[in-house]
Length: 218
Image (tube, rainbow, N blue to C red; front, side, top):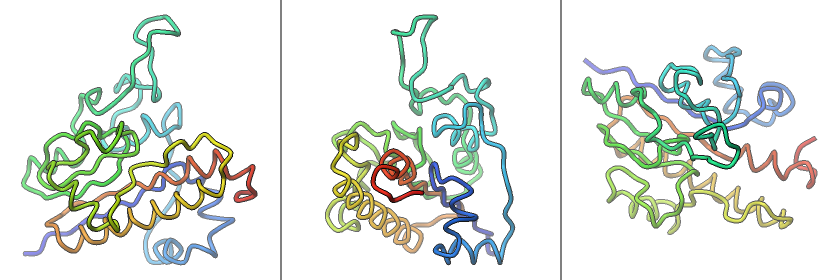
Protein backbone atom coordinates (compact mmCIF):
# COMPACT_ATOMS: atom_id res chain seq x y z
CA UNK A 1 0.00 0.00 0.00
CA UNK A 2 1.35 3.42 -0.95
CA UNK A 3 1.94 5.88 1.87
CA UNK A 4 0.49 9.34 1.58
CA UNK A 5 3.14 12.05 1.32
CA UNK A 6 3.11 15.55 2.80
CA UNK A 7 5.03 18.59 1.51
CA UNK A 8 5.30 21.92 3.33
CA UNK A 9 6.83 24.96 1.63
CA UNK A 10 7.42 27.85 4.01
CA UNK A 11 7.95 31.45 2.97
CA UNK A 12 9.59 33.10 5.96
CA UNK A 13 8.16 36.54 6.78
CA UNK A 14 5.89 36.53 3.72
CA UNK A 15 3.14 38.94 4.74
CA UNK A 16 -0.30 37.35 4.07
CA UNK A 17 -1.66 40.53 2.49
CA UNK A 18 1.14 40.37 -0.10
CA UNK A 19 0.83 36.65 -0.87
CA UNK A 20 -2.96 36.34 -0.77
CA UNK A 21 -3.87 39.79 -2.05
CA UNK A 22 -1.47 42.25 -3.66
CA UNK A 23 0.84 39.75 -5.44
CA UNK A 24 -1.65 36.91 -5.88
CA UNK A 25 -2.00 37.42 -9.65
CA UNK A 26 1.80 37.21 -10.00
CA UNK A 27 2.01 33.94 -8.04
CA UNK A 28 0.30 31.38 -10.31
CA UNK A 29 1.57 28.30 -8.48
CA UNK A 30 0.44 29.49 -5.07
CA UNK A 31 -2.86 30.63 -6.56
CA UNK A 32 -3.40 27.16 -8.05
CA UNK A 33 -2.65 25.53 -4.70
CA UNK A 34 -5.25 27.77 -3.08
CA UNK A 35 -7.83 26.96 -5.75
CA UNK A 36 -7.29 23.20 -5.64
CA UNK A 37 -6.70 22.85 -1.92
CA UNK A 38 -7.65 24.42 1.38
CA UNK A 39 -6.11 27.49 2.95
CA UNK A 40 -6.91 29.93 5.72
CA UNK A 41 -5.53 32.17 8.42
CA UNK A 42 -3.46 30.74 11.26
CA UNK A 43 -2.49 32.54 14.42
CA UNK A 44 1.23 33.08 14.85
CA UNK A 45 3.24 33.02 18.03
CA UNK A 46 3.88 35.81 20.52
CA UNK A 47 6.13 37.39 19.40
CA UNK A 48 5.35 36.58 15.72
CA UNK A 49 8.93 36.27 14.45
CA UNK A 50 11.03 33.60 12.74
CA UNK A 51 12.46 32.30 16.00
CA UNK A 52 10.53 30.77 17.69
CA UNK A 53 7.53 30.67 15.31
CA UNK A 54 8.74 27.82 13.08
CA UNK A 55 9.70 25.61 16.01
CA UNK A 56 6.37 26.32 17.70
CA UNK A 57 4.70 25.06 14.53
CA UNK A 58 7.00 22.03 14.27
CA UNK A 59 6.63 20.96 17.91
CA UNK A 60 3.11 22.11 18.72
CA UNK A 61 4.42 24.08 21.71
CA UNK A 62 3.99 27.79 22.39
CA UNK A 63 6.80 30.21 23.15
CA UNK A 64 6.34 29.89 26.89
CA UNK A 65 6.64 26.10 26.73
CA UNK A 66 9.67 26.37 24.45
CA UNK A 67 11.21 29.08 26.64
CA UNK A 68 12.31 30.94 23.51
CA UNK A 69 11.14 34.42 22.55
CA UNK A 70 13.51 35.48 19.77
CA UNK A 71 16.87 34.94 18.13
CA UNK A 72 18.60 36.28 21.24
CA UNK A 73 17.33 35.50 24.70
CA UNK A 74 18.33 36.70 28.12
CA UNK A 75 20.09 34.28 30.45
CA UNK A 76 19.17 36.41 33.44
CA UNK A 77 17.52 39.76 34.14
CA UNK A 78 20.45 41.55 32.50
CA UNK A 79 20.25 43.06 29.01
CA UNK A 80 23.86 42.07 28.36
CA UNK A 81 23.90 38.35 29.20
CA UNK A 82 22.36 36.82 26.04
CA UNK A 83 22.28 33.42 24.37
CA UNK A 84 21.41 32.46 20.79
CA UNK A 85 18.56 29.97 20.44
CA UNK A 86 19.69 27.09 18.22
CA UNK A 87 18.40 23.54 17.82
CA UNK A 88 19.92 22.47 21.14
CA UNK A 89 17.40 24.72 22.86
CA UNK A 90 14.48 22.69 21.47
CA UNK A 91 13.59 20.11 24.11
CA UNK A 92 10.46 18.76 22.40
CA UNK A 93 10.37 16.44 19.36
CA UNK A 94 9.77 18.03 15.98
CA UNK A 95 7.40 16.58 13.42
CA UNK A 96 10.24 14.90 11.54
CA UNK A 97 11.74 13.44 14.70
CA UNK A 98 8.38 11.92 15.61
CA UNK A 99 7.95 10.58 12.09
CA UNK A 100 11.50 9.21 12.07
CA UNK A 101 10.67 7.22 15.19
CA UNK A 102 7.80 5.51 13.39
CA UNK A 103 9.77 4.62 10.27
CA UNK A 104 8.85 7.51 7.98
CA UNK A 105 11.52 9.20 5.83
CA UNK A 106 12.04 12.95 5.76
CA UNK A 107 13.58 15.66 3.61
CA UNK A 108 14.07 18.86 5.64
CA UNK A 109 15.68 21.93 4.08
CA UNK A 110 16.23 25.37 5.55
CA UNK A 111 13.82 25.24 8.50
CA UNK A 112 14.94 27.87 11.04
CA UNK A 113 16.48 26.70 14.29
CA UNK A 114 17.70 23.33 12.98
CA UNK A 115 21.40 24.15 13.45
CA UNK A 116 23.30 22.20 14.65
CA UNK A 117 21.71 19.29 12.77
CA UNK A 118 20.28 16.38 14.72
CA UNK A 119 19.99 12.81 13.38
CA UNK A 120 16.78 11.78 11.65
CA UNK A 121 15.51 9.18 9.23
CA UNK A 122 16.28 11.07 6.03
CA UNK A 123 18.24 14.21 5.15
CA UNK A 124 18.36 17.62 6.77
CA UNK A 125 19.94 20.88 5.62
CA UNK A 126 20.14 23.62 8.22
CA UNK A 127 18.82 27.13 7.76
CA UNK A 128 20.30 30.60 7.30
CA UNK A 129 21.10 30.61 11.03
CA UNK A 130 24.06 28.31 10.33
CA UNK A 131 27.28 30.19 11.24
CA UNK A 132 29.00 29.27 7.96
CA UNK A 133 29.52 26.42 5.53
CA UNK A 134 32.66 25.56 7.48
CA UNK A 135 30.30 24.19 10.13
CA UNK A 136 28.58 20.84 9.84
CA UNK A 137 25.20 21.98 8.59
CA UNK A 138 23.71 18.83 7.07
CA UNK A 139 22.65 15.40 8.18
CA UNK A 140 24.22 13.21 7.15
CA UNK A 141 27.35 15.41 6.86
CA UNK A 142 28.38 13.99 3.48
CA UNK A 143 25.41 15.49 1.61
CA UNK A 144 27.01 18.96 1.89
CA UNK A 145 29.06 18.21 -1.24
CA UNK A 146 25.94 16.97 -3.00
CA UNK A 147 24.25 20.29 -2.25
CA UNK A 148 26.97 22.25 -4.00
CA UNK A 149 26.88 19.94 -7.01
CA UNK A 150 23.14 20.43 -7.44
CA UNK A 151 23.27 24.18 -6.71
CA UNK A 152 25.53 25.07 -9.64
CA UNK A 153 28.69 24.70 -7.56
CA UNK A 154 27.65 26.73 -4.50
CA UNK A 155 24.67 26.19 -2.23
CA UNK A 156 24.04 29.57 -0.58
CA UNK A 157 22.96 29.39 3.06
CA UNK A 158 22.29 33.09 3.44
CA UNK A 159 23.06 36.49 1.95
CA UNK A 160 26.42 37.64 3.26
CA UNK A 161 26.80 41.17 4.64
CA UNK A 162 23.14 41.92 4.01
CA UNK A 163 23.11 45.03 6.21
CA UNK A 164 24.41 47.23 3.41
CA UNK A 165 23.30 49.83 0.92
CA UNK A 166 24.34 47.58 -1.99
CA UNK A 167 20.73 46.91 -2.91
CA UNK A 168 21.42 45.52 -6.37
CA UNK A 169 23.86 42.96 -4.97
CA UNK A 170 21.38 41.95 -2.29
CA UNK A 171 18.56 41.44 -4.79
CA UNK A 172 20.79 39.47 -7.17
CA UNK A 173 22.06 37.21 -4.39
CA UNK A 174 18.53 36.64 -3.07
CA UNK A 175 17.40 35.62 -6.56
CA UNK A 176 20.27 33.18 -7.08
CA UNK A 177 19.95 31.75 -3.57
CA UNK A 178 16.22 31.13 -3.95
CA UNK A 179 16.55 29.48 -7.37
CA UNK A 180 19.28 27.16 -6.11
CA UNK A 181 17.37 26.31 -2.93
CA UNK A 182 14.29 25.25 -4.87
CA UNK A 183 16.47 23.35 -7.35
CA UNK A 184 17.98 21.33 -4.49
CA UNK A 185 14.57 20.69 -2.96
CA UNK A 186 13.10 19.47 -6.25
CA UNK A 187 16.04 17.13 -6.86
CA UNK A 188 15.89 15.77 -3.32
CA UNK A 189 12.18 15.04 -3.76
CA UNK A 190 12.99 13.14 -6.94
CA UNK A 191 16.00 11.18 -5.69
CA UNK A 192 15.66 10.78 -1.92
CA UNK A 193 13.19 8.50 -0.16
CA UNK A 194 10.65 10.59 1.74
CA UNK A 195 7.21 10.60 3.27
CA UNK A 196 7.39 14.09 4.80
CA UNK A 197 9.25 16.95 3.14
CA UNK A 198 9.60 20.56 4.18
CA UNK A 199 11.59 23.56 3.08
CA UNK A 200 11.61 27.18 4.20
CA UNK A 201 12.77 29.96 1.94
CA UNK A 202 14.29 32.90 3.88
CA UNK A 203 13.82 35.54 1.19
CA UNK A 204 11.14 37.45 3.11
CA UNK A 205 13.29 39.05 5.84
CA UNK A 206 15.81 40.41 3.35
CA UNK A 207 13.15 41.91 1.09
CA UNK A 208 11.45 43.51 4.08
CA UNK A 209 14.74 44.90 5.36
CA UNK A 210 15.81 46.30 2.00
CA UNK A 211 12.75 46.39 -0.26
CA UNK A 212 11.26 49.64 1.01
CA UNK A 213 14.31 51.68 0.18
CA UNK A 214 14.65 50.18 -3.26
CA UNK A 215 11.00 50.32 -4.31
CA UNK A 216 10.65 46.52 -4.37
CA UNK A 217 7.78 46.62 -1.91
CA UNK A 218 4.99 49.22 -1.73
